[in-house]
Image (cartoon, rainbow, N blue to C red; front, side, top):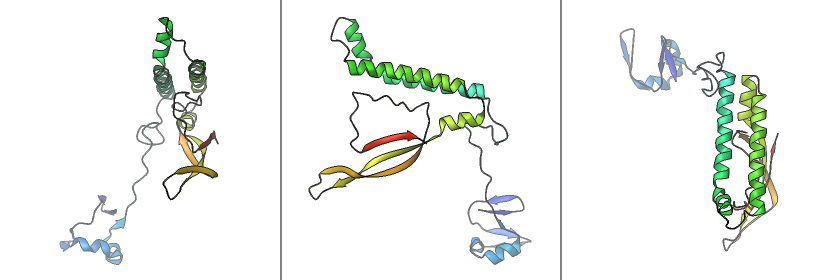
Length: 190
């Protein structure tokens, strides 16, 4: 991008400067651009609209952000519990009891949700909110190998990746009904 007399030029174009018409190819000639007063332009970084109103010196209200975060947590708890609600209804109606691993998972999800709400309510600054929704985690996974017949195996080698995770959305409880990821080793907050 370039700039000329306050105008931001995003793509090369024909220009008329001092009554002289220049073809768009002038943007390939850095010396001519300099002579004409056309300078390189780098836009200012835009503030993250999740946390700021237009500029980083105008943060959104922390209390409002925290309300939204708590709502996200409640939605996550509800979504996770809804997957096994049918088991609870069936058991309540006199049918098969809820398997113990599912009951344990449901309790763990509720407990994690309550813990997250307490953590969120303790946040006091915009930086606290940002850190909670963009927490740094390290994930370790086994390396996948595929042999000549197409059979996949994992490990023993591992790879580590750093990820940013919204703690409102991430729960540690292991869903007993979810398929196990054979490559997964660990996910820990940095």
